[in-house]
Length: 363
Image (cartoon, rainbow, N blue to C red; front, top):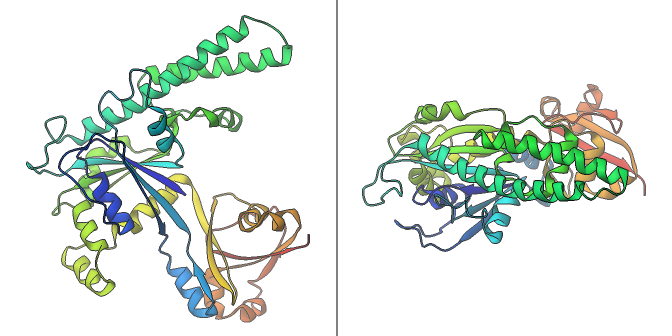
């Protein structure tokens, strides 16, 4: 799972990046004006993995992972004049979702580029930059499709061009109404047709309001109107969380209690990201390794096999399945078998969050 962190200058993107990744990237009161990108891979905290590791005592324990990318360079007007520059566009486009850091803190030593702190204005401003960028891309594509249709030729190719022409027109009409493409219902075939376009406003987005130290989670209520199926909203005390990320576990626990923080921000951000991207985890266990894997909600046992190794999918026979809760209740895999909570499933079995799966296969 790859998540790109974007936002206006001085919104605290790098502070949030440090909070999420336990990083030490230097922050500054002013943008350097350069396109800087910082990347870190973070293990997904999961108590179920810890419990399974304690049960199996494997040689290796592997958590699911999230890659965070702190992407600088988004300023007002950047989506105009031909859209985002190639390198910057590529850095943003290759992510599965975007984490938009919105400034909600006051600091006279770090001036806001727009002159005041206004989270609603900033969300609209950056979203419009993504919309403008997509309009440039789609307008260019529409022009090429119009030229293609004027030449005639192979009927099948003409029909495909005509269908794409109609789709692009619909997308442009939506964008011209200042609405991001993630709010537009598309068929699976339409989604597939758009994969190579690098349309930024189509990406799922988690809006994180970066607040003052004394704020609480209700601070994000001001941005509630922006929430939707593919856009979620939450608040984070970025500076406080960045300090927390540098502490040892015992010290961090005291810190959390003192400031009334129920859990580290990383946990909440990852949970919201999973919901946004509609993914969840299954596990493989054994003496060699206990490991968490991430798959889309609705994935089948065959999809799970392919996630572990393509050979498993090619030679799939059956999946041995027991749910984490049932295994813990039974106390061991042997007991789970006795209680009939362990079972054999076929390739069309839909994986549940927390399933423990062993693939039987032959190559």
